[in-house]
Structures are given as structure tokens and as C-alpha cells.
Length: 503
Ligand SMILES: Cc1ncc(COP(=O)(O)O)c(C=O)c1O
Image (tube, rainbow, N blue to C red; front, side, top):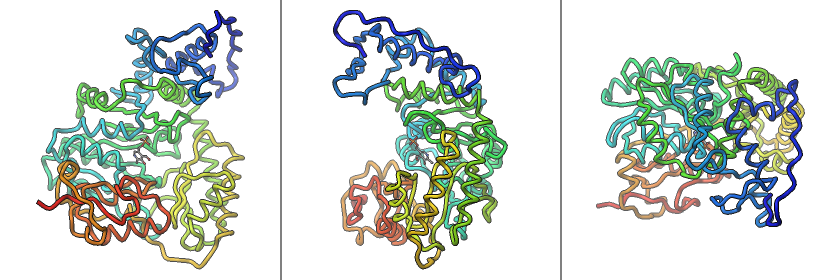
């Protein structure tokens, strides 16, 4: 920490890295230019050797608002000079491009949310059609609004046994492209929120036959390609671009994401402009350095770490399959979709337990989970979890299900997966149209002006420009009654909805 009282003592020399320990972060710094810059800056600031007259305004002091600002180093005048004279970000992005087999790569501090927006801004012009999976995350939908694209929706099937979405069928995409020959891109999410995976290579082939790029929102697939039990990552499977959230399944700081693309069907200059258009001008160096460090870690030890992850999840699945009535999601589903080896998804209907009550029990025991609705629990396991943590979680989950067991109920697909949209206006037109708030009951039949999504998973059930159907409203109300958080709606109680004002 910098204090005002004269030059501080020089810091003790750091211990040398332990070359036998693949997880010693000091050994990573030689392969990770941003991590190295972050370590140098923070050591210099701690020693009082750096006295910044730049932002951020905390000036590396931890005695004003406390340690909440610890480690916050900017890219500009932090990891690099204000003029980026050292080129450390470009170096780190080049290394990541090489690792994931891309021609173009950028690190984002805005999550896959920003990555999806950037890709939507890069694929076409306002008014262009794009073939898009309707189980898309709200960030891609809003990217479509920003870019003024016109979605041609394709839907994955819903697996009857589990009520969960499968992957995007290549045939449906082929038909959509045939019916919309002017479409400029195919955009899909793979893996889905619940870990189902599809034939990305088949989708790439279909898109390429039609002469358009395949763009994959792989926010949940940053660990793909590390192990034979995991699917190849989307670029390796033939996609032209993908976005991955390094902070979701890799050990990176929240918001860290990577956008990667191949030359040919996408233009690097256009990608660059689109990326910069919506990225902050003050990127957090800690986030960037953690992405770089995560990539260096994967290069060093990715396969071994992924091996442990796959083994731990397999053991937890096996343990949970012993819980009477509990369905543990495993591939392949009836439609041939895979289920990736690292996400732990369980279905509760036949146990009679409420997922919301189970979640509360897990929270009380110190185990927050990624998603819990009435019927489903989704737990994210990553390479940062060890045997003890995963075993303890599986045991507590089993115990909570026993505690809340009740009469079995039928499988009902979640609101987000069952949407049958009727697009009346383009999303952008509806987003900017004059709107009014009306009681939800009288909103049925009107054109929605807002995005309404149970979160998680953040898949819009209603989107700007879509006709509000009784089925969509009922599904949202049921989700709310079952304890879901309804996000992005002006009125999260759903007593009213924002609709496009009648002319
Ligand atoms: C499928 C999908 N895409 C994109 C995102 C956005 O990712 P981020 O939180 O990194 O902005 C999410 C977030 O959960 C997601 O589930």
C-alpha cells in the first residue's frame, strides 16, 4: 500500500517458484505477460515504488474503503503504460489465439455479454437476417437489438424425459437457411445452460454450405477441448467465432471472457470495431491478467486438471444416482444431444422435493448453487474444486433431497425452454417503440416491448417484438410462483407488462 510518509523499505525478494508444482502461480508468470505485469505492479505499489497520478481514484490505498480495492490495477498506466508501449495485452491475446486455434482474439472485461454483443455487431448490417437459436441468452438478444438484426428463430427440441432443451438440430438450421437465403450468419448457444451439447461440426457444415459463418455462444464451454471426455471447443469443431466466459468454468475473475474468431467468413477489422464499440475504455487489469493466467494454466496442466474434474463429476453423478427418484442428467438424450461431463444437473420431480427448498437447505449449509427452480438443480463444478468439496456437496445435496421428499410430480419443461415465439416486429423496432404498461391479463395478444427472463438461465420467455401469448404469460407466472427471479421486466411481479403502444 502507498502511504504518504517517505520512501518505504524495499520489499523482500519473492520466493522462487516451485518448478514441481504445476499450480504455483509464480511459475505461470513466465508464460503469462499480463499476470507478470499485474504481479510487478502490485508488488511495486505495495512497496511504495508506484505513486500513480492516474485513475483509479483509490490510488492503491487500502486504508480508505478497505481491501475491497486490493488488486485493482488498470490496464492503462497499470499493466502497461498509458500508450500501451509494452504490448502486453496484445502478447497475451496472441497466446490465447494460438492456444484456441483462432486468428483473432480479444479479452473482454464485460463477460460473454459483451462478447455476444460484439459478435452481433460484427456479422451483418441493420435489417439483415440471422438464423438464431431461440434458447439464446438475453445478451445475444440485446446484441441483436443493438445491431438491428432480424432473427429467424430455430428451436431445439425439449427432451420429454427431462423437460430440458437439447441441442440445435442441424436440419432445422438447414431449413431456416433455405427459407431465408439472405441470412448472413447462424448464431447458436452451445453448450446450453444445462450442459447439453450438439453437433457443432454439423452446424458449421450447414452454415458453410450456405456461405455464412457459424457463431457460437460458448459462455459455459471455456473448458471444452481439454480432455477426450469433453467436447472439442467450438472453433475446433469448425465454428467461425466463439465467445467463452473464462470466469464461468476457468479460474478467472468475474466478468473475464474471451472472444475468438477465424478469418475468412468474418472480417477481423469489423470484429475489432464491434468489440471496441461496446467495451469499457478502462479495463480492469486484474480481470485481464486472470484470463491470461487461466490460459497459461490450461497450457501447462489443462488435461490433468480436466481429468480430475471429469472424474469428480462422474463420482458425484454416481453417488446421486443412488438417491431414489432423482434423475441425474447424462447424455445422450433421446434426440442424440450430449451432456457435457462437467456440469452437475439433477431433476427432482420424481423425488417430490422442491428445488427451491433444497436450494435453501444447501445455502444454509454453505453450498450456493448456480440454478435451482422447482424441478432442477444446476451445480457448476470446475477445475478449482477438489475431491473433498465435490463429495461433500453431493452428500449434502442427497441429504437435502431426503429432507424435502414429497409426492412425485410430472416433469414440466421450464418456462425458458418451451417458448414458441411469434415475431410481430423486429426486436430493435419494438425496443425503441413507444410503450405502455398494461395489466398482464390484458397484455395477452399485444406486442411485447420488453425482455422478460427467469434468471437463471436468462433465456427470454418474452422478447421485444414478440406477441404475448397466454402460454408465455402462464409459464412466467408459474416460474415466479415456483420461486424464480423474474429479471429485466419493468415490473418483476408480472402484475403489468410493457407493450408496444397501439398507434
Ligand atoms: C448462454 C450464456 N451466454 C452468455 C452469458 C453471459 O455471460 P457473462 O455472465 O459472462 O456476461 C450467459 C450467462 O450466464 C449464458 O448463460
